[in-house]
Length: 438
Image (cartoon, rainbow, N blue to C red):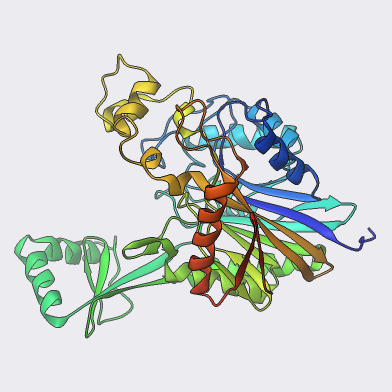
């Protein structure tokens, strides 16, 4: 395949789509769709299961059970999207049956997707999108998921488990000597430490590799001069994804790595946990041309590492989580709503009539859409388009993306500029758009 002078990409965050989006062609939305359809590659994180509600609702969901009719894929592809990440904390909302139904819908429509599969190898493999401007390979993974949702290896004598491509990580809580003594006293006083030792003797658990670590309530504690939290990605997962990035680099012009990660710095949701930075940089080192993060539903900063962009979070792109058509009984119980009520009442109760949660914080309804140009391996342009999800109106009117302008555009770009300064990234605001020095 011959490669043209440049390849245009648009990358977005979470698409929580449950109703028609493109049907409302007001000017700001039409302008956004025109930007998407003018690219060679348009990426989004598919944070719903377009499986017509097939499968069985899992007890553990990512907060809501995100299933949708499969026609939402028509809306997304009509908007211009042609590359989908599927590894996220909602991938198994309808258990393995719902995941398989989703895979079958995407395969039948020949939609390029990655991050979920019938076993671990399948979920980790790249997907390839071939365009007249060049070929793109993408892998998708998630660090945010419930136990058992990750895919498992296949063996010669046993099938693997369907699931998502996991990025596991270790967390160590560093505390003072006095604090650790208190934790030990509680552990022994309640008999929890004795029970842990019994499980080690039974072969169900193992002592920590580091003898200075004290495990307590499934967390690891260690002495330091002052308290802090350390997160480190699991080497086994990182090495496996490095191999696939290297493989994709041999088979495509550009490699994208997608990471869905809610994890944050201790008290700041806008700052990613340390393991995310470590992982993203290693993916660039392995050959990725960019890393696209999403998960916390709001924007995080942008780092230019070795000349390649790392978008730590692009926030929400479509936010229709309050418009899910059906919810399982567990959702009603979780949010203390009578089973005789309806989904709208569940969300209204959960958010206190828009006084708390997502509807109460405009950061969840403001995001950015980077537009990139590549000349071979080299980025020749990186423009930032501010996006509004129409925060404020009733649930069925908000959540639809549109090009932001005026005060909203200024606020979004200024926040991105501030968050990116941490990484030494210069975001230049020029009117209602921004550019980044590479």
